Length: 590
Figure (cartoon, rainbow, N blue to C red):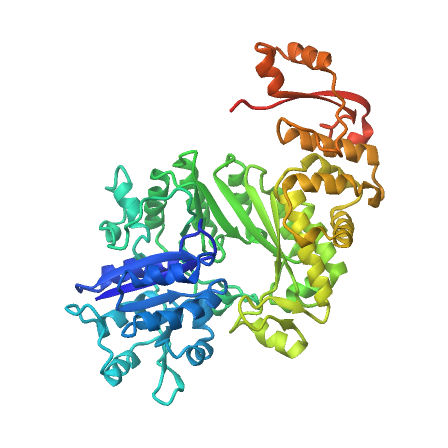
């Protein structure tokens, strides 16, 4: 018999930590001849391709890991899998099915059970209860016997003979996280020296057939649970925080470092809960860093201690990146969703985080008491820190959260099916939300891609970011620019043709900063129609000679550019230094 765990990821670069963790746990704790394996797909793959991938593995039991991004696809796959493999036992778990079990068991008669909460122990007990090691297929003829066995297992939703859904009982959480094997055994076998690797994971799972893929993001958890009560978050339902032993964390992090994994994302719901612990992990990473691996942390910046902030001053670029959920600067909004944020302390700590650490700041549209004007203030609050990236999220009303009840009682409208995104609130109309969707496109184009750094700096301290993005979104909607995907170069032209729409700015300076950012992208073959190129070949040659960079005329001209601007484009405040400024831009040889 074969137990197959199925993860359907949002993108090819992602890995499903859940199926890997459960797979390794079952292998370690259940002594049987059963084969335990996992397989991964993406939501972008055709249904037929996923069905074939599952069918060809000939599983006896299939368990799906479900989230809001893959629930719709999973509900399409399950009925077809049952047609192809009529004797297979199908279960599911994860936050989406696990917190809406009755809904999905009634919707999908082909689904046999749903696991609630942590899946490792429950899955192990299911395997022990119904495993038939000497049989290739699962015997479903004695349904009553199977249901009786499953009904004795904690943490399961089952369907009775009359179609009603019952829940067995709550399962205790795994308190000792050292019981969880390392979820990437393929990395252990590839590690040059594995003498210090976790002994519980020394033998790779039979599921580990893949080679190490450096293009994947590797997810890692050093703790489970969250002590906070954010009304919109599933993590608020489990406040019992448990930590993996520090020495084990160090051993497992070393495996990532030894394998030169490019990106490791901690999935701890709030990483910086215990200063002694989280600083110790940071210190280990810094002391053992391989100059290649980036570690990603979700943090509550408000709670960073002085010691932590002082330590961060020693961290060079390329080691860590932070995701900071600001969500809103409206204190009334934050209070309504049970976030007791000290905005002033949060702002002070974010400013103290050094620029060597990549910062990704989040906002949520659709919170209580937040209209467009209030959201604009929250937007400017976040942009005042000049983050490396800003993400505009849209409130998702998830099953089982406090927000679900609040939204039902207070007039929210949201999607009936996953991803449950908010349509409107008493404070924002659907039109407002669509406006912010378009504004999000511009934020990504003009800020997150870092192509307009000089232009945006000038706009920020003159017009202001919210005013700029609001005006450009209005212009974009009038011109229909959001009706199709656009190339990076389009946004340069779009801004150049809309400069007149922007008050408080010197149009000549803005145009030249836009030209400068365009030139910095790389050597141009053909200049676009909006760009006025002030070229002088002799001055180009002279500046190359003065820079000591003219050794091979053809090569050096081809990897540099000459331009004249109306201001000092490199100045912090270019409007204070106007006049004709020559600029030699040199491009790196590849």
